[in-house]
Length: 215
Length: 350
Image (cartoon, rainbow over all chains, first blue to last red; front, side):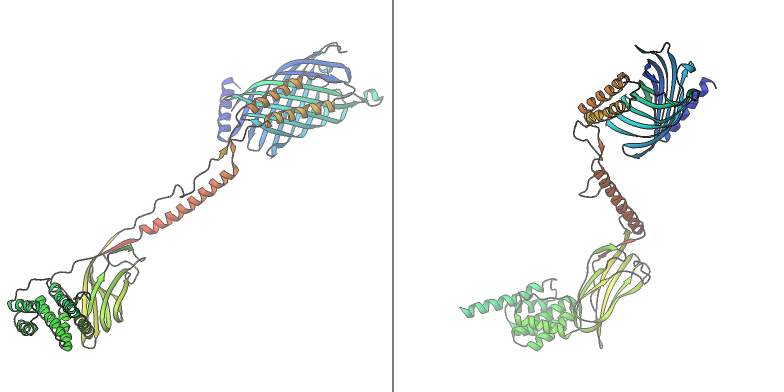
């Protein structure tokens, strides 16, 4: 598909969205992240870039983000090399009250090189609370249960949770400032070689800060 | 002294008919002499001169004047029966004749009153000017019948030259009628000039009076649509809440929730995680909350005012619907205006 066709499609989509009172913001983000796996000695820190998109139509809203992180071993880490992670998240939410929504979505984080860290995919089910701090400024807090997680290295997780803090501030006109924080805890258990189940937990925190344009 | 006052009062009473009967100049010389004799209190001469005048050729008003002089003179001479007869002739010639009880002698007035009750007359017919929507009003008609009689009131004329019975009944004394000015099918009577005729019949005696009127048709004024109700005004649908620390408090609450959740869910085997990510986003949230606390709060919808305005709009819309319906009806209605016309000269009661 040519760039012109994509541009036209976006133009028509934006006009159709306006016609139906759909509000949307989209923009790039800078991310900071830390990641721990298996034991306290295996920890990474890094940063990266990505983008986020969110849209709302009446009581229905959707949100998606993608961020590519370069994670290097942190000070004192037992890891010898870093890796690159691509974190994709998506949610669809429905407002059940003025300040609360139920939401569902998925998470997929892949590591490159593949064996340097666990890749994980899971379904998100949870709720979020949001509140307008002032004109054009909204803060949100979310709690998601990560159901049916799949890991590249195998294993399972009985308890996985994802907490989030989000902020959207309209800076001027259509320009928004966005920020998001995610804390993820996955109690992964593996059974390498059939020798018995061992804990291999994963813990990640990601902060994303960026600008966005509203439609 | 008492006798002198009595004479003065009598003179004042007797002077009144001269003033009352001076509507038209008297041409007949005999009648003028009779009038002069009356003014000089020469009653015998008045009787002979007035009777002589009546044998001459007189106009209607002169004839009425001659009988009136006789009536007053007979009254002054205590010939009440003759006075009554004279006054009967007066009211037969001029049924609208009216004496002022404050200006004539009681004897003359009572004789005139007796005369009125002994003659069948329709007098003092009045049709008032009026204007009303066809079918929603009536024309007031008043007249006096001096004896109990069968009275038929009609309106004659109009565009079609028809005759419309307004009322038919037995009446006596003051009569007040209402004429809706409608045809049998409910439509207003056609526009045009009519004559309201009142005919009274008692045995062989009849009397009638008439009043010409003009009926005109016009369109009924329509009502203006309402944009507001008197005494009710729209209220602002937004209100600015008072400034508060709520934004900062909520930012603390949400950031604190994230911090507590992070601390509580950290894995003991993985150790404490980095807090710089939470510090970045939480700090941004707190700064935003602080800024929003300092800013003037955004106007928020005022639910009660919105509800009130909605009720007001509904009420106005409902009223305008009623007005529109009323205007549809009014455009099919006719404004009937009735104006009495001056009586043509020579026309009078029979």
